[in-house]
Every structure is written in C-alpha cells, then in structure tokens.
Length: 168
Image 1 (cartoon, rainbow, N blue to C red):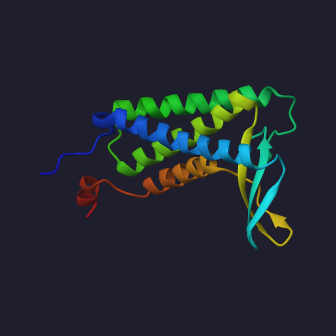
Image 2: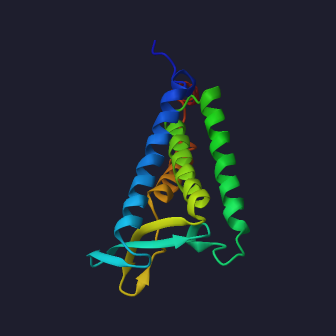
C-alpha cells in the first residue's frame, strides 16, 4: 500500500520552492528595471511587448489611484495569505495539486509584496495586445498567483482515490 502524501513531511522543501520562485520573479523585475526605462516598451511579436511599468494598485490597476494606503493594505493581505497557506502546508495538506497551488500563490504573493515594500509599487513587464487593445501588463508573480488559484479550483473537482472507490 502506497504511503499517503502530506505536505508536512517536506514543509521546508515547499518553503524553499516558494522562495526560489519569488527570487526568480525578483530577478526578472530587477533586470527589467535596470535595462528598460520606465514606460518604455520593446516589441517582441505583433501581439507581445516587453515593457516596464509600475502598478501601485492590484490586479488590473485596482486602487492604483488611491492616496498610498493601498501599498500597506495589499502588502498586509499578501503577507497574511502567505502565512496562512504556509501554516496549512506545515499542518499537512494531503493533496499534491493543492500543495502546488499553495506554493505558487505564496511565491507570487511574496514576489509582489517585496516590490510594494521596496519601491511602493509592483514592477510589471508582460504586455499582451491585439491591435490597440492591451491586456493590463503583469509579471511572473501575477502568473503564479492566478495559476495557483486555477489549480486550487481544479483541485476542488478531483476526488481522493479512497473517496472515488467509495463513490462507485
């Protein structure tokens, strides 16, 4: 009989993975900031630009025009979510997809929190567009958060093997 998966047995590994992903995000953001002036853009394909913009708000520039309090609010939310998910991993998550989701969300949240604390806004650099229509610019940390959330939703549609056997 195979041993049941638990995130608790390798908690340190999940923390290291989240930290590694956040470090990759920060490295890319540093490279973009060092090599491309703010608001500059380089066309890579007819539908994708490498750009350098700052977003003081959240997704889709939500609250970007607020007076500055959003920096602390979004930083606190990112830290609270990360701490909660890391605590859940420490207690033991028995689903691999949920574990991957948590690690991804923590990495992305921390990547953006570091930007907010360091410079007061998030560095975005991925700009997809079609004609004159531009999707709001985003970054690897955003991809990790959204991807983790998608994995989490997908995991809600899966049954553990024991429950599948009982259901049939």
